[in-house]
Image 1 (cartoon, rainbow, N blue to C red):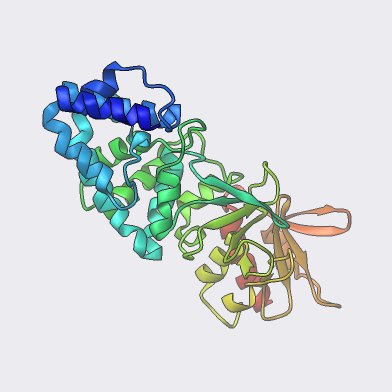
Image 2 (image 1 turned 60 degrees about the horizontal axis):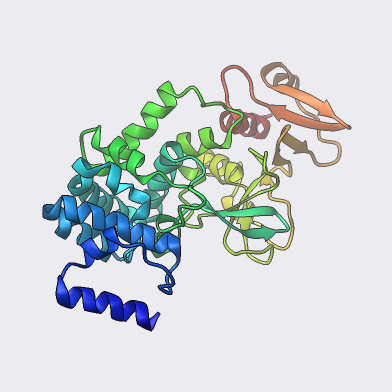
Length: 329
């Protein structure tokens, strides 16, 4: 390492341009990873060919969430957008410190860079994935390209295509996806992240998925284990949207020390959001009314009753209507 640094120092004394040195030399045994050197060479190529962009590159590098790691912006292939990329990135990620607008970033980025989230180990609730929050966004934004997860260039270009404030642009991106995407499906967690802000605005953006294929058995975690409070984000969304404590209280739906996270109604009924539907658990001697059977679709599996979506209502909407109906029954 010392000999390599001495060589670089000598070159600078003789020619004075570190970028030309990085771009032209095959540097080995430098003490830096080959990947890190490749990232630096990319920046060097941009600065050599477009010296007027040097200050813009430095702005990117100096951002508190990036700290020199700007490889996920793919700037070498988006020279014409470098100035705008920085402006948009800086303004949008200033929204990260409020849970509502941070959730807006999570929702829009999930659509334009699917599976950008980072694996954060396993738990009794399944694999944990981090979707970004406050200063911890740095972990995602600077993630190694060896396992490409995040497409920031595509995301920023998407924002530049729309007009309005940056909050309005993010909301428009989400609305446009819901209107036109061929991937939307009421059987897909991404659809629910997009449609319902409550899925991502709790301020705790660590989620567990029971299996790799899970779309409904999710948990929004406040900690990395069962010892912390957690809630199924579908349960949270339904409780908030009902907005009536005579039907259900959100505080009763947060749990800890157990894998379960039901929607707890004030009449004693509990709804568990599972892959097959909302599993209904009723108090002893409670019977569903004829109106419920006539107006909601259900299925039986191993003596368990599930409330399921229909042609007009998705998983969240059908639960809201059912809860309001069952309280009045």
